[in-house]
Image 1: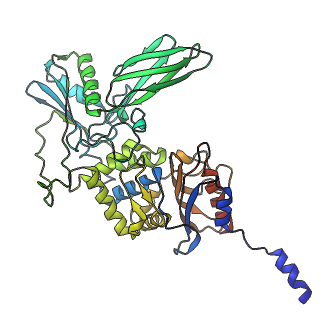
Image 2 (image 1 turned 60 degrees about the vertical axis):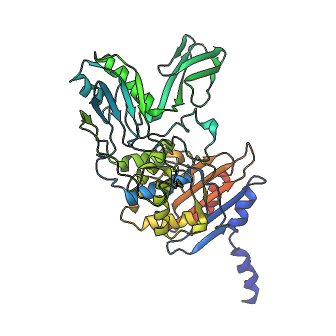
Image 3 (image 1 turned 180 degrees about the horizontal axis):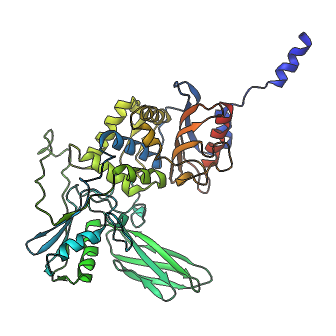
Length: 458
């Protein structure tokens, strides 16, 4: 028996240390936090679990969980739909926070054309077409978002009146450029391949195009809108004119000025009640918010997440970013997340001011899983190797179809938090962040490989 002891020790080596394995895989200079717990909350892996990290789009986990906990997400969205009315000789197009209003030719639900039809049925001549987004204060971008994102679809303006994801489509061919909303400064030239850059200064409606277009090539650029209320009213004007309605005026907007929270005139007072909307010609009822939350998490839709934050803020507040953040904070208190483990400046994760610890991420995930809506919310997360932003990750590994998690990517930052089914069949909860990654490098592969090993060992 004594002779067998060394043989047994050699045949059963200790498992590799996941923390050491993760650090060995990271690019030089990067720092990482990872917490993995089992169904009872026992820590399996803990790498700097209380460190504060930029979470990127993992921020959407907190925003969408707060939405499930606070808003009526399963019923038709009768409070968020856009409406149209006549006011004197003007057409007023008012938004109420819906993210899905569409002017696409093949639109079947939540269509701007429905509102245009309602106006055309009662008027053949109008004065101005007014875009009214005063349901929320005029805060089109959250603090801490890089200004260079503003012209892109990732950083488009946020507004209670949202149309076509607040993006304009610009089509480029060798024959020219098609764009209805932007004035084009075209410097694209013929070339062997198609490579086009679109740039503009914030607030401008002049778009500069540079690059090359291949023979027979076509490029569709999706450009962010700075004043979504103006764009929506402009688009309604074109639809009215196509229906024979004469518009004698122009396109106007109505915004609501944000009253600063520290203004001595309003500090400590309840938000002023907004007057009821005058009678309308038509108002849309979008599909349930649950469908929009699924889109938001699956493809990491920034605009929709930001609108959810403002809708949270409108529950018993002004609809401001600050009021929305207060609702997210209240959700985190319910979840038992340590206060030192989170700070948010926005709802999408585009802000570099956001901070989250792995421990706070796991606390939210475990709390959400125990809620009556937990299973429905988890179903909105991307599935490894199958869909959303995880469609190409974990494919061909043991976690394909067995990891349900929100991704996050920002400059020098990657994140992944959610649930995975281990080899034992147990459900593990995890939250990981990698920050300070050098340019041209990534921490994604290191985290993915570590999670695959953790799942195999548990």
